Length: 443
Image (cartoon, rainbow, N blue to C red):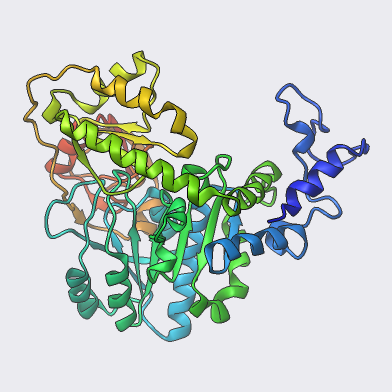
């Protein structure tokens, strides 16, 4: 597979052209990548009006994923906002109420999209075993909710931050029976397309889907994809670029674009075999850890999440022990430590497992995390987000209305949502997760 963006930029970098254009470093600098960092010069195409090398590269990505695919250089955040915008446009065209049902573990970007677009949101909650990071929604529960609301779209996060997945095929069938779009935040699962049997949302019936390529594929931070189903392409394909441009910078990074472009060649040239070999090794690694008493959660192939309290540690303490041994995790909270590994870690996997196994077991910790809780909704997300605000100590926020998502990033999942009145259970959750301040509406 060719790499038109990379080829063009490399030719330009080697041409010794006098750069009388942005950026200001003029191809020189101490990082070593400045020569490849360009702007929309003649022949470089333009991301939101692509008709040349970028359009050609996006066509390559579309062929790999088997559906219309577009690039983002601002991560899945840009794609999530564009997905919500497109879903609202679709609802208006269909004459439906523009209501979105969303899993409560939505990323904070979904909240900002709802605020910017004044989207109406009702939350989907798990029937059991839910927490702030996981929201196991069943097809049966979704069926009941769609019958009650006649919502125009459903938004879910799959995989979630802990590596749990949903039965997307069943959810898609329910959505389509009710004429609702299925939107999937697949930020952590771009690689799912390249498993021996694809588990990618677009192959399971999703209508719109975002992937953070940089999270699991060999792509620079910020590189992401927005996918559209073939069924929607005729109606909405021409609107995708405008939707992305609405939320994106007019100066997209050509370093990130080259990274996405180069990844196409990598993905087309033996990546599936490389991934298969590594996921088999990951499965064996998980089995070894389980045999030694570690409790794992999640079913995603490239994520390893340990429930650390049964082994005698809070997740943050467990992560600190590993940091002393030169291993940095993706995320840790009082209950979990999350590792994201890819085939690029293949040569380090044995060291990773051995280091974990060297941590001695201690008496289990019984303290349970707070249950998923919905405070009273007082205002819409938009009204609360745009209201006059002040930052106060979280312990003094009882009864106040939240004005901005109060989250730690990662995982960027909000304990309370803008427009909700903070109650005792919410403050207890803030304390449990170490949130010291919050932004509330000025009284």
